[in-house]
Image (tube, rainbow, N blue to C red; front, side):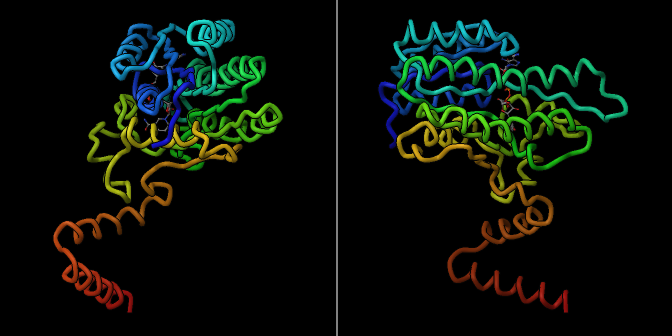
Amino acid sequence: MLDLSGKVAVITGAGSGIGRGIALALARAGADIAASDIDLESARETAELVRALGRQALAERVDVRDGDALRMLANSTVRKLGRLDICVANAGIGRFGSVLTLPLEEWQAVVDINLTGVFLTVQACGREMVRLGNGGRVLVMSSLAAEVASPRWAAYNATKAAVRHATRSWAFDLAPFGITVNAIGPGWVDTPLLDQIPGRSGDRADFAQMVPLGRVADAERDIGALAVWLASDAASYVTGGYHVIDGGLHDGGAASVAAVALRELAAQHRGDDLLAALEQREAELRGQSA
Ligand code: NAD
């Protein structure tokens, strides 16, 4: 078990989904948590869940578009929890629409929160970490959507690609101060955001069909585990990286179709019987392509 005892983490968008999952995973590893969200009530719920794990927690209402509020968050975290070691710039939104019709306000909202909000978060935490002089870990929430474009997703695609690339530059800026900066690139994660994906019912099984590993990610168990590793001593030499965590989704379509067939075989057979079934399937595929 990786140990974050004595560390303190600030998390934006901590009231829901991935932010809450990361808060709980870091807390289970021993960290105290400053949970911030534009929705104070949800941040308070996360803080309550962290306290139930025996860790200290703060809850603050912070809109990541507000640099002053982020600076106050970083500062009050140090005053109330004693340190600031880990910063998770997680808050983000999705707005979808064709270039022909997407209103400027929606484009701007995505840029303001997913890109400028991440910059302001990294700046506020980075300045506080440099002031304290203990180094630190910055995690930026990008997405597989940084790499894979989809129709009507341009605002989201562009901002996630932008923070992915900015992470590499911020890693240079902060390395001299012992601060690492890494981007996380999740595929589908089981959070309320999935209910907003256009053209899909929100049915998790529908998303899971696309994923070679056959399921959507769990915010705490999967994304939280990567965040704990990146925040731990084990990752002290890792910076400027973009860490995809997507159950194999990045190679998409054809791979997923093949994986569905193989998962069915794996569910029906065991041991030598499974190997024989795989040989038979391979022979059938060769026969089809001959
Ligand atoms: P979510 O909607 O469950 O949580 C987002 C949180 O951010 C909410 O609590 C919301 O109140 C908060 N928030 C929104 N605007 C804010 C603002 N201006 N200031 C502060 N907080 C604000 O979504 P999620 O799936 O947990 O998404 C978290 C991050 O993970 C986002 O950056 C998202 O783009 C990214 N992501 C999600 C998935 C996925 O499949 N769910 C995949 C890849 C990346």
